[in-house]
Length: 143
Image (cartoon, rainbow, N blue to C red; front, top):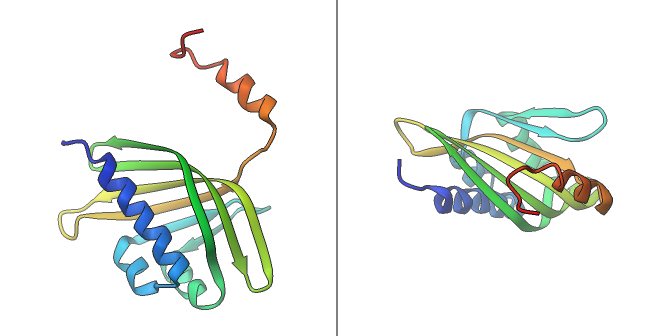
């Protein structure tokens, strides 16, 4: 399979832009019928595709985003997109903003090309000491 990292990154960016624009039609085109969204609330919540598309019309919005630290990992007919993201999310008058980990799973189908099957959003821990300690566990990094 040819390297599809750029294509997957562009698709995830298109999905974020559709969410910011409140474009449920475009989001429906980009997502698979079995799409699920996991939101890192306490307790975590799942939204299936119909629920997420309806929630976009009922005030669940991404009003701003910046993606950073992007990693794409193709694995056969699926690909994982992972990014650190600065997000501003709104649900009615409640606003969440700050650093999030966003992961998307994309699957290439026989018809219609790549479709997002999963999106997960979780708040990032701002403790820089934790990130440094975890980085030291990486065996592939030259010290």
